[in-house]
Image 1 (cartoon, helix red, strand yellow):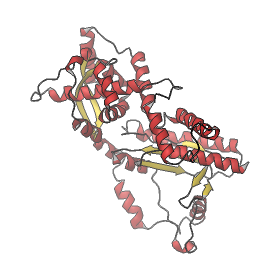
Image 2 (tube, helix red, strand yellow):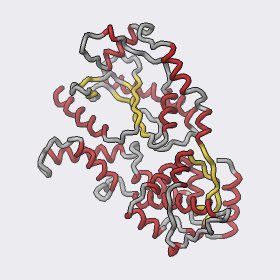
Image 3 (cartoon, helix red, strand yellow):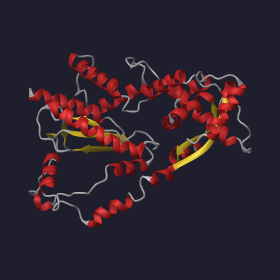
Length: 375
Protein backbone atom coordinates (compact mmCIF):
# COMPACT_ATOMS: atom_id res chain seq x y z
CA UNK A 1 0.00 0.00 0.00
CA UNK A 2 2.67 2.49 1.03
CA UNK A 3 4.82 1.47 -1.94
CA UNK A 4 1.98 2.32 -4.32
CA UNK A 5 1.46 5.63 -2.51
CA UNK A 6 5.10 6.57 -2.97
CA UNK A 7 4.96 5.51 -6.62
CA UNK A 8 1.88 7.66 -7.16
CA UNK A 9 3.53 10.54 -5.34
CA UNK A 10 6.62 10.15 -7.52
CA UNK A 11 4.49 10.34 -10.66
CA UNK A 12 2.73 13.44 -9.35
CA UNK A 13 6.05 15.05 -8.48
CA UNK A 14 7.22 14.65 -12.08
CA UNK A 15 3.92 15.97 -13.42
CA UNK A 16 4.14 19.00 -11.14
CA UNK A 17 7.82 19.62 -11.81
CA UNK A 18 7.34 20.37 -15.50
CA UNK A 19 7.88 24.07 -15.56
CA UNK A 20 10.23 26.72 -16.81
CA UNK A 21 13.29 27.74 -14.82
CA UNK A 22 12.00 31.15 -13.77
CA UNK A 23 9.71 30.22 -10.89
CA UNK A 24 9.24 30.69 -7.18
CA UNK A 25 8.10 27.69 -5.16
CA UNK A 26 6.72 28.23 -1.68
CA UNK A 27 5.69 25.97 1.21
CA UNK A 28 3.82 27.17 4.31
CA UNK A 29 3.83 24.67 7.19
CA UNK A 30 1.26 25.48 9.89
CA UNK A 31 1.46 23.32 13.04
CA UNK A 32 -1.03 20.48 12.44
CA UNK A 33 -0.89 17.49 14.76
CA UNK A 34 -3.73 15.31 13.49
CA UNK A 35 -2.98 12.39 11.15
CA UNK A 36 -6.55 12.22 9.86
CA UNK A 37 -6.54 13.44 6.26
CA UNK A 38 -10.05 14.89 6.38
CA UNK A 39 -9.19 16.85 9.51
CA UNK A 40 -6.01 18.06 7.81
CA UNK A 41 -8.05 19.23 4.82
CA UNK A 42 -10.47 21.09 7.09
CA UNK A 43 -7.69 22.83 9.00
CA UNK A 44 -5.74 23.71 5.86
CA UNK A 45 -8.85 25.06 4.13
CA UNK A 46 -9.59 27.28 7.10
CA UNK A 47 -6.02 28.59 7.19
CA UNK A 48 -6.00 29.07 3.42
CA UNK A 49 -9.16 31.16 3.63
CA UNK A 50 -7.51 33.50 6.15
CA UNK A 51 -4.26 33.66 4.17
CA UNK A 52 -6.14 34.52 0.97
CA UNK A 53 -7.87 37.41 2.72
CA UNK A 54 -4.50 38.84 3.72
CA UNK A 55 -2.94 38.27 0.29
CA UNK A 56 -5.94 39.84 -1.45
CA UNK A 57 -5.32 43.14 0.33
CA UNK A 58 -1.93 43.41 -1.36
CA UNK A 59 -2.63 41.81 -4.74
CA UNK A 60 -6.05 43.14 -5.76
CA UNK A 61 -4.58 45.70 -8.15
CA UNK A 62 -1.28 43.97 -8.77
CA UNK A 63 -0.46 43.17 -12.40
CA UNK A 64 1.34 39.84 -12.62
CA UNK A 65 3.72 39.26 -15.50
CA UNK A 66 2.84 35.55 -15.69
CA UNK A 67 1.52 33.57 -12.72
CA UNK A 68 -0.19 35.04 -9.70
CA UNK A 69 0.63 34.12 -6.11
CA UNK A 70 -1.61 31.16 -5.33
CA UNK A 71 -1.67 28.56 -2.58
CA UNK A 72 -3.29 25.14 -2.51
CA UNK A 73 -3.71 22.78 0.48
CA UNK A 74 -1.66 19.59 0.56
CA UNK A 75 -2.32 16.83 3.06
CA UNK A 76 0.48 14.47 4.01
CA UNK A 77 -0.81 11.20 2.58
CA UNK A 78 0.12 11.72 -1.08
CA UNK A 79 2.78 14.33 -0.55
CA UNK A 80 6.46 13.53 -0.94
CA UNK A 81 9.49 15.60 -1.85
CA UNK A 82 12.36 14.20 -3.91
CA UNK A 83 15.83 15.25 -2.75
CA UNK A 84 18.84 15.67 -5.01
CA UNK A 85 20.34 12.47 -3.59
CA UNK A 86 17.32 10.52 -4.84
CA UNK A 87 15.73 10.06 -1.44
CA UNK A 88 12.07 10.89 -0.94
CA UNK A 89 10.62 12.54 2.11
CA UNK A 90 7.01 12.64 3.22
CA UNK A 91 6.08 16.19 4.13
CA UNK A 92 3.68 17.36 6.79
CA UNK A 93 0.40 18.92 5.63
CA UNK A 94 1.02 22.40 4.29
CA UNK A 95 0.00 25.11 1.85
CA UNK A 96 1.91 25.01 -1.42
CA UNK A 97 2.34 27.24 -4.43
CA UNK A 98 4.51 27.72 -7.49
CA UNK A 99 4.54 30.82 -9.68
CA UNK A 100 6.48 31.68 -12.83
CA UNK A 101 7.65 35.26 -12.97
CA UNK A 102 9.08 35.21 -16.50
CA UNK A 103 11.19 38.20 -17.46
CA UNK A 104 9.85 40.39 -14.65
CA UNK A 105 11.98 39.72 -11.58
CA UNK A 106 9.89 42.26 -9.63
CA UNK A 107 7.19 39.60 -9.34
CA UNK A 108 9.69 37.31 -7.64
CA UNK A 109 10.52 39.91 -5.00
CA UNK A 110 6.87 40.79 -4.50
CA UNK A 111 6.13 37.13 -3.76
CA UNK A 112 9.03 37.09 -1.31
CA UNK A 113 7.43 40.13 0.32
CA UNK A 114 4.09 38.30 0.61
CA UNK A 115 5.87 35.42 2.37
CA UNK A 116 8.06 37.76 4.41
CA UNK A 117 9.16 36.65 7.85
CA UNK A 118 12.36 35.86 9.70
CA UNK A 119 15.15 33.86 8.08
CA UNK A 120 16.27 30.78 9.98
CA UNK A 121 19.45 28.81 9.31
CA UNK A 122 20.36 25.39 10.68
CA UNK A 123 23.86 25.67 12.25
CA UNK A 124 26.44 23.36 10.69
CA UNK A 125 27.48 22.08 14.09
CA UNK A 126 23.96 20.70 14.51
CA UNK A 127 24.61 18.24 11.68
CA UNK A 128 26.81 15.22 11.43
CA UNK A 129 29.69 15.44 8.97
CA UNK A 130 28.66 14.82 5.33
CA UNK A 131 25.04 14.39 6.41
CA UNK A 132 21.97 15.96 4.87
CA UNK A 133 18.90 17.24 6.63
CA UNK A 134 15.32 16.89 5.48
CA UNK A 135 12.58 19.51 5.45
CA UNK A 136 10.70 18.04 8.39
CA UNK A 137 13.81 17.71 10.54
CA UNK A 138 14.70 21.31 9.68
CA UNK A 139 11.25 22.48 10.72
CA UNK A 140 11.53 20.60 14.00
CA UNK A 141 14.88 22.20 14.80
CA UNK A 142 13.54 25.68 14.00
CA UNK A 143 10.44 25.18 16.14
CA UNK A 144 12.44 23.70 19.00
CA UNK A 145 15.23 26.28 18.81
CA UNK A 146 13.73 29.45 17.30
CA UNK A 147 16.40 31.76 18.72
CA UNK A 148 19.39 29.51 18.01
CA UNK A 149 18.39 29.10 14.35
CA UNK A 150 17.52 32.75 13.77
CA UNK A 151 19.87 34.21 11.16
CA UNK A 152 22.05 37.17 12.09
CA UNK A 153 20.79 40.74 12.00
CA UNK A 154 22.93 41.40 8.92
CA UNK A 155 21.18 38.61 7.03
CA UNK A 156 17.72 39.73 8.19
CA UNK A 157 18.42 43.36 7.30
CA UNK A 158 19.75 42.42 3.88
CA UNK A 159 16.38 40.96 2.95
CA UNK A 160 14.42 43.74 4.65
CA UNK A 161 16.35 46.35 2.66
CA UNK A 162 15.60 44.50 -0.56
CA UNK A 163 11.88 44.45 0.27
CA UNK A 164 11.79 48.02 1.52
CA UNK A 165 8.99 50.03 -0.05
CA UNK A 166 6.65 47.14 -0.84
CA UNK A 167 3.75 46.98 -1.52
CA UNK A 168 3.67 50.63 -2.67
CA UNK A 169 6.90 50.06 -4.60
CA UNK A 170 5.07 47.75 -7.01
CA UNK A 171 3.25 50.77 -8.46
CA UNK A 172 6.59 52.09 -9.73
CA UNK A 173 6.73 49.05 -11.98
CA UNK A 174 3.64 50.12 -13.94
CA UNK A 175 3.31 52.15 -17.12
CA UNK A 176 0.08 53.54 -18.58
CA UNK A 177 -0.28 54.16 -22.27
CA UNK A 178 -3.10 55.17 -24.60
CA UNK A 179 -3.59 52.60 -27.34
CA UNK A 180 -6.01 52.22 -30.23
CA UNK A 181 -7.74 48.82 -30.09
CA UNK A 182 -10.99 47.15 -31.15
CA UNK A 183 -13.78 48.00 -28.75
CA UNK A 184 -14.09 44.38 -27.63
CA UNK A 185 -10.54 44.43 -26.28
CA UNK A 186 -11.07 47.78 -24.57
CA UNK A 187 -14.14 46.37 -22.82
CA UNK A 188 -12.35 43.15 -21.85
CA UNK A 189 -9.38 45.03 -20.41
CA UNK A 190 -11.74 47.25 -18.46
CA UNK A 191 -13.28 44.12 -16.95
CA UNK A 192 -10.06 42.08 -16.58
CA UNK A 193 -6.99 44.37 -16.84
CA UNK A 194 -4.67 41.48 -15.92
CA UNK A 195 -5.33 39.87 -19.32
CA UNK A 196 -2.93 42.35 -20.89
CA UNK A 197 -0.03 40.20 -19.66
CA UNK A 198 -0.89 36.94 -21.50
CA UNK A 199 -1.90 38.96 -24.57
CA UNK A 200 1.49 40.67 -24.76
CA UNK A 201 3.32 37.40 -24.22
CA UNK A 202 1.21 35.60 -26.82
CA UNK A 203 2.07 38.29 -29.36
CA UNK A 204 5.78 38.45 -28.53
CA UNK A 205 6.08 34.63 -28.64
CA UNK A 206 4.00 34.22 -31.80
CA UNK A 207 4.84 31.63 -34.43
CA UNK A 208 3.80 31.06 -38.03
CA UNK A 209 0.55 29.36 -36.98
CA UNK A 210 -0.33 32.30 -34.74
CA UNK A 211 0.24 34.68 -37.63
CA UNK A 212 -2.63 33.05 -39.50
CA UNK A 213 -4.96 34.20 -36.71
CA UNK A 214 -3.46 37.70 -36.94
CA UNK A 215 -4.20 37.84 -40.66
CA UNK A 216 -7.80 36.72 -40.16
CA UNK A 217 -8.64 38.83 -37.06
CA UNK A 218 -11.91 36.92 -36.76
CA UNK A 219 -12.82 38.13 -33.28
CA UNK A 220 -11.24 41.58 -33.13
CA UNK A 221 -11.47 43.25 -36.55
CA UNK A 222 -10.11 46.80 -36.84
CA UNK A 223 -13.35 48.46 -37.96
CA UNK A 224 -14.61 49.38 -34.47
CA UNK A 225 -11.43 50.63 -32.83
CA UNK A 226 -11.43 53.01 -29.89
CA UNK A 227 -8.73 54.79 -27.91
CA UNK A 228 -8.29 53.45 -24.40
CA UNK A 229 -5.77 53.74 -21.59
CA UNK A 230 -4.07 50.47 -20.65
CA UNK A 231 -1.81 49.65 -17.72
CA UNK A 232 1.26 47.55 -18.46
CA UNK A 233 4.17 46.52 -16.33
CA UNK A 234 7.29 48.27 -17.57
CA UNK A 235 8.59 44.88 -18.63
CA UNK A 236 5.49 44.08 -20.71
CA UNK A 237 5.56 47.54 -22.28
CA UNK A 238 9.21 47.15 -23.25
CA UNK A 239 8.52 43.72 -24.73
CA UNK A 240 5.73 45.13 -26.86
CA UNK A 241 7.69 48.19 -27.98
CA UNK A 242 10.67 46.11 -29.08
CA UNK A 243 8.66 43.52 -30.97
CA UNK A 244 8.56 44.71 -34.57
CA UNK A 245 5.36 44.12 -36.49
CA UNK A 246 3.61 45.55 -39.53
CA UNK A 247 0.04 44.28 -40.02
CA UNK A 248 -1.11 42.89 -43.32
CA UNK A 249 -2.93 45.72 -45.11
CA UNK A 250 -5.55 43.27 -46.32
CA UNK A 251 -6.82 42.95 -42.73
CA UNK A 252 -7.72 46.64 -42.67
CA UNK A 253 -5.08 47.54 -40.10
CA UNK A 254 -3.66 50.67 -41.68
CA UNK A 255 -1.15 52.44 -39.45
CA UNK A 256 -0.46 56.18 -39.66
CA UNK A 257 3.05 57.25 -40.73
CA UNK A 258 5.73 56.50 -38.11
CA UNK A 259 6.58 60.18 -37.71
CA UNK A 260 3.07 61.12 -36.54
CA UNK A 261 1.96 61.50 -32.93
CA UNK A 262 -0.70 58.79 -33.31
CA UNK A 263 1.63 56.10 -34.63
CA UNK A 264 2.64 54.62 -31.27
CA UNK A 265 -0.96 54.26 -30.06
CA UNK A 266 -1.94 52.50 -33.29
CA UNK A 267 1.17 50.32 -33.39
CA UNK A 268 0.80 49.19 -29.77
CA UNK A 269 -2.91 48.65 -30.31
CA UNK A 270 -2.52 46.30 -33.25
CA UNK A 271 0.07 44.27 -31.34
CA UNK A 272 -2.25 43.94 -28.33
CA UNK A 273 -5.16 43.04 -30.62
CA UNK A 274 -3.08 40.34 -32.28
CA UNK A 275 -2.16 38.97 -28.87
CA UNK A 276 -5.82 38.63 -27.93
CA UNK A 277 -6.64 37.09 -31.30
CA UNK A 278 -3.83 34.54 -30.84
CA UNK A 279 -5.09 33.60 -27.38
CA UNK A 280 -8.62 33.02 -28.64
CA UNK A 281 -7.26 30.91 -31.50
CA UNK A 282 -5.71 28.65 -28.84
CA UNK A 283 -9.00 28.18 -26.98
CA UNK A 284 -10.18 24.58 -27.01
CA UNK A 285 -12.92 22.58 -25.27
CA UNK A 286 -11.62 21.26 -21.95
CA UNK A 287 -11.46 17.64 -23.12
CA UNK A 288 -9.78 18.33 -26.47
CA UNK A 289 -6.04 18.44 -25.94
CA UNK A 290 -4.72 16.55 -28.96
CA UNK A 291 -4.55 19.76 -30.98
CA UNK A 292 -3.47 21.84 -27.98
CA UNK A 293 0.10 23.01 -28.52
CA UNK A 294 0.57 23.69 -24.82
CA UNK A 295 -0.26 20.05 -24.11
CA UNK A 296 2.30 18.83 -26.63
CA UNK A 297 4.90 21.14 -25.13
CA UNK A 298 4.06 19.79 -21.66
CA UNK A 299 4.24 16.21 -22.96
CA UNK A 300 7.65 16.77 -24.55
CA UNK A 301 9.01 18.11 -21.27
CA UNK A 302 7.68 15.04 -19.48
CA UNK A 303 9.49 12.85 -22.00
CA UNK A 304 12.72 14.82 -21.53
CA UNK A 305 12.46 14.34 -17.75
CA UNK A 306 12.16 10.57 -18.13
CA UNK A 307 8.55 10.44 -17.01
CA UNK A 308 7.81 7.38 -19.18
CA UNK A 309 10.81 5.45 -17.78
CA UNK A 310 11.81 4.10 -21.19
CA UNK A 311 8.53 2.24 -21.63
CA UNK A 312 7.50 1.18 -25.11
CA UNK A 313 5.13 3.72 -26.63
CA UNK A 314 1.50 2.51 -26.72
CA UNK A 315 2.23 -0.26 -24.20
CA UNK A 316 -0.23 -0.68 -21.32
CA UNK A 317 2.10 0.90 -18.74
CA UNK A 318 3.00 3.73 -21.12
CA UNK A 319 -0.67 4.47 -21.81
CA UNK A 320 -1.45 4.45 -18.09
CA UNK A 321 1.19 7.12 -17.49
CA UNK A 322 0.03 9.04 -20.56
CA UNK A 323 -3.56 9.07 -19.29
CA UNK A 324 -2.38 10.28 -15.87
CA UNK A 325 -0.48 13.09 -17.58
CA UNK A 326 -3.53 14.05 -19.65
CA UNK A 327 -5.75 14.05 -16.59
CA UNK A 328 -3.26 16.15 -14.63
CA UNK A 329 -2.87 18.62 -17.50
CA UNK A 330 -6.62 19.08 -17.99
CA UNK A 331 -7.20 19.54 -14.25
CA UNK A 332 -4.31 21.96 -13.75
CA UNK A 333 -3.88 23.91 -16.96
CA UNK A 334 -5.78 26.88 -15.53
CA UNK A 335 -3.19 27.18 -12.78
CA UNK A 336 -0.45 26.63 -15.37
CA UNK A 337 -1.63 29.76 -17.16
CA UNK A 338 -1.88 27.78 -20.39
CA UNK A 339 -3.10 29.75 -23.37
CA UNK A 340 -6.09 27.44 -24.11
CA UNK A 341 -7.62 28.25 -20.71
CA UNK A 342 -6.93 31.97 -21.07
CA UNK A 343 -8.22 31.95 -24.64
CA UNK A 344 -11.42 30.28 -23.49
CA UNK A 345 -11.83 32.93 -20.79
CA UNK A 346 -11.45 35.71 -23.37
CA UNK A 347 -13.87 33.99 -25.71
CA UNK A 348 -16.47 33.81 -22.95
CA UNK A 349 -15.88 37.47 -22.07
CA UNK A 350 -16.55 38.54 -25.66
CA UNK A 351 -19.96 36.89 -25.42
CA UNK A 352 -20.69 38.15 -21.92
CA UNK A 353 -19.74 41.76 -22.65
CA UNK A 354 -21.39 41.84 -26.09
CA UNK A 355 -18.26 43.31 -27.62
CA UNK A 356 -19.63 43.99 -31.11
CA UNK A 357 -20.80 47.60 -31.08
CA UNK A 358 -21.36 48.97 -34.56
CA UNK A 359 -23.13 52.25 -33.92
CA UNK A 360 -20.58 55.07 -34.30
CA UNK A 361 -22.25 57.30 -31.70
CA UNK A 362 -22.19 54.48 -29.15
CA UNK A 363 -18.55 53.81 -30.01
CA UNK A 364 -17.64 57.42 -29.30
CA UNK A 365 -19.38 57.31 -25.90
CA UNK A 366 -17.61 54.08 -24.96
CA UNK A 367 -14.31 55.52 -26.14
CA UNK A 368 -14.79 58.61 -23.95
CA UNK A 369 -15.61 56.45 -20.93
CA UNK A 370 -12.58 54.24 -21.55
CA UNK A 371 -10.30 57.25 -21.48
CA UNK A 372 -11.92 58.96 -18.48
CA UNK A 373 -12.57 56.15 -16.00
CA UNK A 374 -9.44 55.28 -13.99
CA UNK A 375 -8.17 51.72 -14.50
